[in-house]
Image (tube, rainbow, N blue to C red; front, top):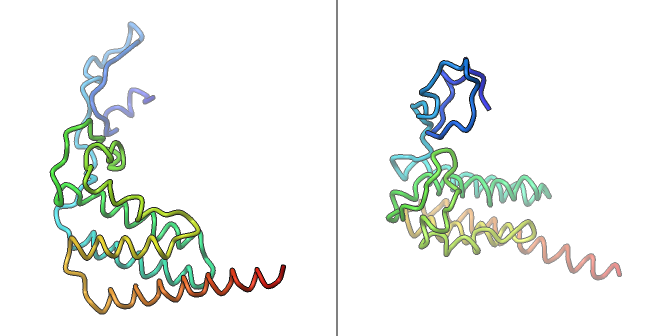
Length: 174
């Protein structure tokens, strides 16, 4: 809900007025107020670079035991970057896109990409595995620097090895 003065500067899409006071003067408020924020990037370069950096930083945090931070850096931030460039990678099915959130109806708008989401978003306990799936996808869509790719893969392997050692150690304590 907006106050009348806020409608002049608020970015919103069109809508319909359900009720208004008889004294209300702004009859155009249901038409929307551009410019709307852009949730799309025009180039793969920045988005892919950010996603790769997120994977690397996230795996470093995972190694330090910062699993929640790692989860966000690997399973949230790179996905946001990918969502901002999907329109450059595959045709969008016109299914009610939301100008404020690329994640809205992504499964219907980008069915090819959506088929990869399960591997990229494996959950809190499989963050390194998710990082590897994200890296695989990034390598499919962009010429990723091979050294960066090697570093991310090695760090993910160290994270998974560390988790196995911790699990076996906990098992031995029982």
